[in-house]
Amino acid sequence: MLKFIAQVFLLWVIYSLSIWVVKTSHIPLPGSVLGMIILFVLLSTGVIKEQWLTAATTPLLKHLTFFFIPIAVELMQWGDLFVQNGYLLFLPLVISSLVALFATGGIVQLLTTSSNNDGMN
Figure 1 (tube, rainbow, N blue to C red):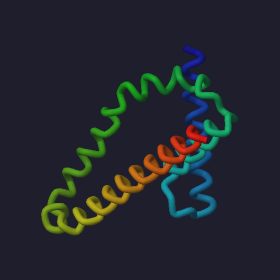
Figure 2: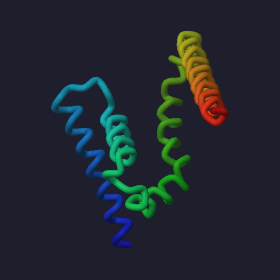
Figure 3: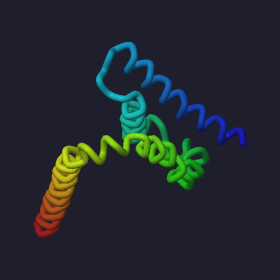
């Protein structure tokens, strides 16, 4: 239990730090997104080991869908906006999805081709 509390505290510190950075530097980015970027960098560089967070993140990931319920309820209050201007929201969603799809596909093909060429030499 102490391990779980310590790991949640570490996640909270990263989140609080990112909120503080956004507020003080007026970065046009949500603090939670900056916190995820900071956590990603810390995990990627090995400053924080994945094992240091598994006790806290496993239950959070297991129940991740529950975190989207408040968002869905809030969107219901904006129903009239979606009915009136939904077509304006549809185009950016389609374009951004296609950009992500083609970028991911292109990167995978590039990496697959380069790794196949390296193996032949």
